[in-house]
Image 1: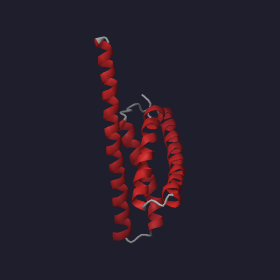
Image 2: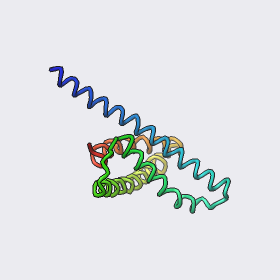
Image 3: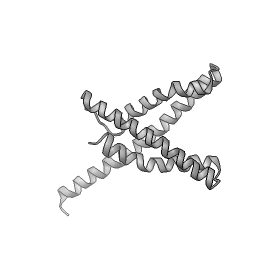
Image 4: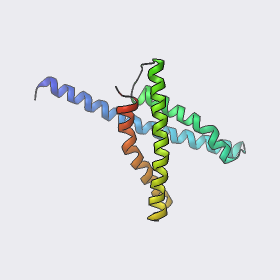
Length: 142
């Protein structure tokens, strides 16, 4: 193997590893934002939990999209048509994930009768396995 090829391979691997670590960090940050906003608006402000869910979902999704675009995958290109296409693709993925998550919840919790916490962990883990490559190769492709 040539030196140039080895350096190129290392850069590609390094970029994927770094992006995946950032991806997980953004996932935890998104979860934290969602949790804190839910807690504050429901417990402190006294809002109805269903209304809170509808109010914060767009904010949390926007945070997740923007942070992945500009930090996890370092897509600094700002052409309006490119960003619009990415948002549409992101929302398609969100819709697909919601449907898949319900199916997995039904399978793990409803059919296999696994504990609810384990079911949520499994659903999240399975979701991460397909959303990272889809984000990297389809939504925020280099």
